[in-house]
Length: 261
Image (cartoon, rainbow, N blue to C red; front, side, top):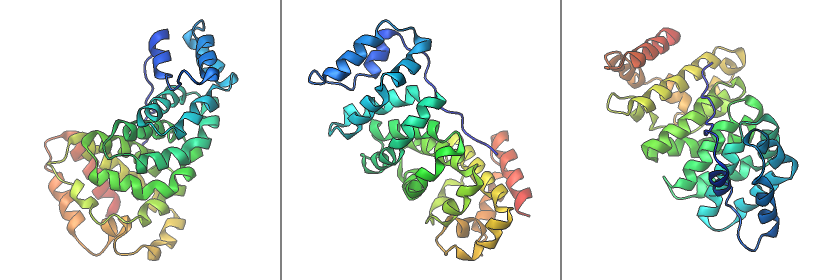
């Protein structure tokens, strides 16, 4: 199964790290104390210390702040901390709230992108995929309507989720009648390639008995029907992509065609 690696930012210096954690205000003495303690801590120990000082809950509280920039900084701070497994166990309680923030924030905003970056890290393992189930329609909407940077980031999340067989039914039953528009040569190569990997993961999971037994549950506008319905449109698009200028795209398309024969 293909998965997207988590987005891990390079180590930050003290000042820039504190800036990333700058989700506090002069009225929050707890945050000021927390940041003051961090100033003398080596980078390698900082993540554990933040967790042990209950810093994750301090950051989490700012997700309810009405100011988008404050929430964005909180998400960026979580993103920097989310490659630590123990931190993930605490950040997971905010996943549903983060998904809601991605859905409700302005389309293509920095806040929306920050949320998707964090969800990419949190979806590297299968542990928290079930918490993102209700946001699959949102992800597919962003895949169609978002800017290229949003499309790429949401595809990283979808690729990770699609590698989990337990999520296959949820993904295939989602309404996605327009997704075929992404299978063309004019689409950004990075978007197209990730879209093909996304589909490859789903096809591999469809081989399971459980998935085969539930095929009748998918309606005509579902992602399943787009890929495996009566229409030959998808097959025609794949055939055209066999002539794509990029070799990696051609190889991925050939793999899909072989799998669905």
